[in-house]
Image (cartoon, rainbow, N blue to C red):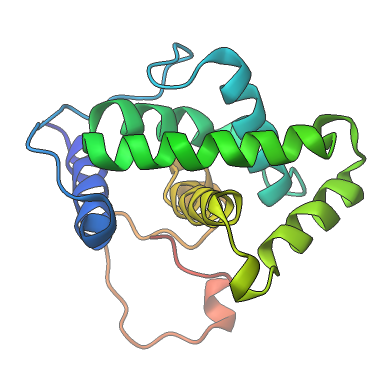
Length: 184
């Protein structure tokens, strides 16, 4: 196993450990692979909605969008191979309600700013009005940001990245680091 595979495996295990109270643990041990274009969990129409949603959460700017670094395929693989059956069922139920909400509001035909406004209004629902669409959106948003920041493209090319093993400098100013956040 090479260093990159070990790091990917460690990130997956760490993420799963942090989310274990929410999602449970899978007893399967699976090899970490690069995301492919084959869908394992989502149906094509669901995947299209997921991809649009992720690209509104993290659009292309001077950095790639979420789908450009294949965050959508990472989530598809994790749902198919890592998360337990109970979490997958809960995710599916909530995601179908989110998809229905987005379809009813013509999400795919709205401009970028209108899509952002729709998601902001969903995210800022009062506690008494929070439904499965709300919870699904928050779950997807959290996973999108996490998997985006831990992707190889973003970590190595857009964040400070300290390859392991490598030189360690404990006392450095932020200016010396180019005013960037550290990669996960």
